[in-house]
Length: 288
Image 1 (cartoon, rainbow, N blue to C red):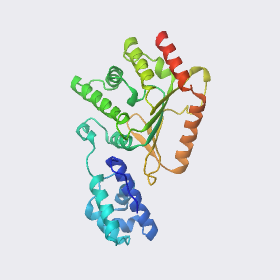
Image 2 (image 1 turned 180 degrees about the vertical axis):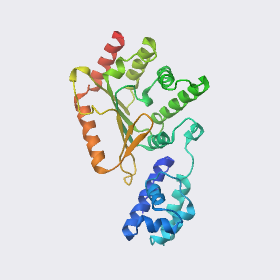
Image 3 (image 1 turned 90 degrees about the vertical axis):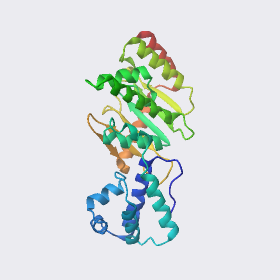
Image 4 (image 1 turned 90 degrees about the horizontal axis):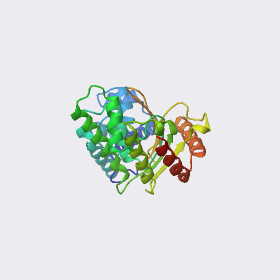
């Protein structure tokens, strides 16, 4: 069995571990109900474990490995070591009081991704926001929040952006609807600063920004914003992230991934080239 590269985040490790346990169970023809009964749990618990949505108890995993016929000491050791690392808290743990559970998973996946492709309709993507723009967006969406909470939410967003600067930085490819760039979030000065920041980010080799212009009319992604995350470990499926008002969808079925990937390809094909992106960003800044 081949497992993970050192340095992947705990969220990705949990998904990877769950995927391995599911494969072992299916190879033996064991039902989730029977596996859950063995670890004094339920079919639902096994499902959550296999989806990587819960932490893992070493005793439960050891018992499942025995049930699945994994007797080799090295194979068992590799999996149990993965359990320990998958249960380690991520850097965002100190912000748990601010992060809804459905978004904590995304922050972990974002950290572990090898490539992130995103389409945004209303705002500049969070990983590309300036501090001032982020503060304006967060303030508008957190009515009644104390100034200290607003500041911590801004700090969290800026901390997330460090993923684009590290040694394992992912390829980040954003398609931004022109409407998001013409909406003066935080006022004219803040918006101009944000647009200038996007122009500067275009110099980073791992960042590509395209604009879906007004003059194209209707297009394939009229349904709204989404992101596609790909991971360095081949055992991990691509994941589609679709955020809603008070929740989010995480899609990994092949037909769903293929559908969103096709839409993203169409968006990239009809949006501005990188050179055209700089031209349209400068034009928008002048017209604000």
